[in-house]
Length: 233
Length: 383
Image 1 (cartoon, chains in turn green, purple):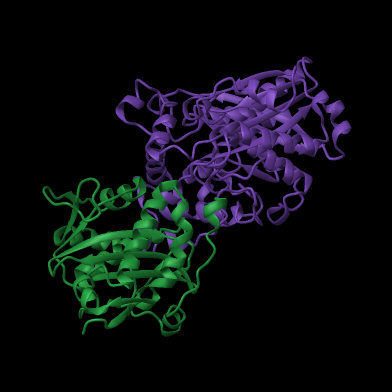
Image 2 (cartoon, each protein chain N blue to C red):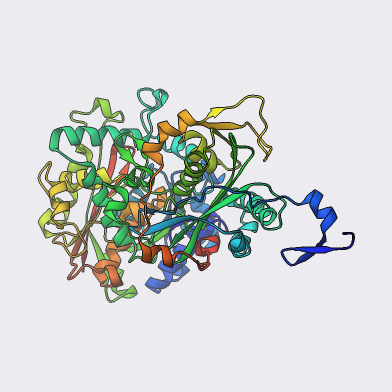
């Protein structure tokens, strides 16, 4: 066995060491059924789970945000970049990622991971299309994924940006979970319990299923649109 | 004017210089032509750590020794600056005055901005109890709903109309059209258009905006030295009302607008029916509807019907806010009153491109200070 190599992305790694460091990301889990949500613009955003193979393209979309300090985009983008890269290269366990696609273009990304069957950990929400409540719809979708598709009982949440704090912690009415440290460090850990989820669901978790066939087909892949707002807003 | 929006890379003075230079260039004026500068800003000291911005502006524009003043009258600072410039020329003290309004506020957290803006309410009777401008707009809206049958759909329709107009204005902060079902009536609307101050929702409020706008005023007899298409300020009105909304005779009536609009129409020897378009102060969509009535365009309670009938659309009989209004063009508070007059000027010259109102001959604007406790009204016409 010694000396045998396998590949993580394009990188060769020693299999015996990789058996210690690498994680099996591909644990069996229920697929998240795609849905569509109506945006304020009248456009339909398709929200679907991503395949691991799509990660490099998603990373490409996040890259321009790594130097945008406004609204803490750089921190959020850098962390999500690392999380998705870790997922792609088998360094983050049981991670999942949803994307929002509008008219064939990537509009936003959310990711989380399962700590265990009961507890999920919310990672990050990045809206590439601004001013259309893309982040709010995607944030709700990832918790719908945890609670309804995967059957979690609680989701740990924290916030790094003031916008995130207002949108996620305040708007969802989350509770502080004392004595628990979120994986992202920083400040307090808040929790979405099943009771909280069920309470906010009628108001904040939206979407229609099934996605019409033509729309689903158009959203099977995505383009990366230029982020005009990074320099011009 | 500058493009309205977010300008992380520019200071307040940068923005005011940029718009001033554009106005001077548009008029073909040089530093020799400008006798005085009125610089309007509500929060330059509080948000930008700058006071005496009139002095800074004349210096940066190389207009020394022109007279320079800062005018502060809340969100009506721009309108007040134009009025004062007009008076300076009318009394014979100046021949030519540059008016520039500007504000840079996007870099400040929303909660802080909301708090600063709220300091223009009655401090003892309103502010100390937590009153904000959205909360006052919420109460006015609720009253209108009860008294005149206004609906949340009406509020959304103002936003949809003004976003569409803003999408045709390259200077607008928000140039993205929105759909009625995206913000009202669909399940997703609850997420897309969250509650701010019941019944006011996010899309019923204007954005927080950076930007500056400028106009060059001169005596009528000198106007032809600058342009072949001068636009005349035919009427000006200004009136005040009780600071605290609770002290007003009828909180559903903008009495200061009724008085100031009547003054402007009387001075210009016109009536509301003579106007080709209006730029109203829609910091909240409810205000466009109420102002359209209290300025005299529609009977009390009939503004929402006019909206639904398309009367106030760009192609309607009386287009309101073809620029996108505060809702879509944006609301850099000290610049807004000037930006309204800039839009009327472009419209009356026939230079408004995709948002041009057909055969525009006369236009009306109103610029609100406080929660409508200090209002300026203008009537402009082609000379």
